[in-house]
Amino acid sequence: MSIIPITDFNDPQLDIYARLSEGQLLHFYEPKEGIFIAESPRVIQTAFDAGYEPVSFLVEDRHIKTQARSILEQYPEIPAYTASYDVLKQLTGFVMARGMLCAMHRKKLPSLHDICKDTNRIAIMENVMNPTNVGAIFRSAAALNMDAVLLTKGCSDPLYRRSVRVSMGTVFQIPWTFIDQSVSWPQDGIRQLRELGYKTVAMALTDRSVRIDDERLAAEDKLAVILGTEGDGLNDATISMCDYTAKIPMAHGVDSLNVAAASAVAFWQLSKK
Image (cartoon, rainbow, N blue to C red; front, top):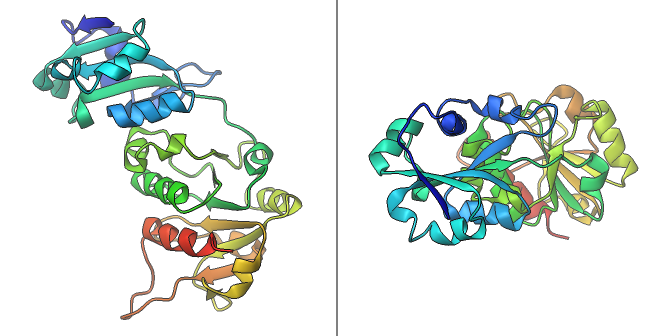
């Protein structure tokens, strides 16, 4: 294994862990795809299984021969920078989950058409900006029978470190792409979904909202479940273009759930056929 003890905090090869923002990592190899940081051996292994390739590792020294060993042995030629817990915390500014980070190459994102091929239930996030919510929605989508996830460009990137961590690596297990990298949202996006045979359901509180357990929703062969941003919810234009608007019945005077919690309820109910 290519173990490299950290002796110089200013080593340029450590910039990706210590001094570059996630936005800078996203554009690291522009115009080619950038890089991202995965955290913890379990999540890193899930990324490997999905075909992502490492750039380098940052490992707490006490884990090299224990929980990080099987990860490092898969790529013995890839540099693994290592130091004690206190040094790494000082370098990165945060506590590393399970003592390991891995910088990885991003993949080229697939098209909307490729993502939706051979699917029946998909989730769409519209301008969900909180990376914690993005990660939680991915985890619910993967666990509760969604076949793919689409995001508008106003969403936080699913490969930001916090999103990956909260998702427990499910961002590597379920197909996804940004829906409006080549088409406008909602006009062209919803039109293309209809051409692919999808009915769209906006999760929103309106006068025409039906209950989420409405039998008409369950009867649809192909359904796209659209979730809006925290606080403001979905855009009016999106709601007006959708085939259905649905709501989760509330009790005790509560008007709504956090978007991540709502996604789990929606995916569980709307995946039933």
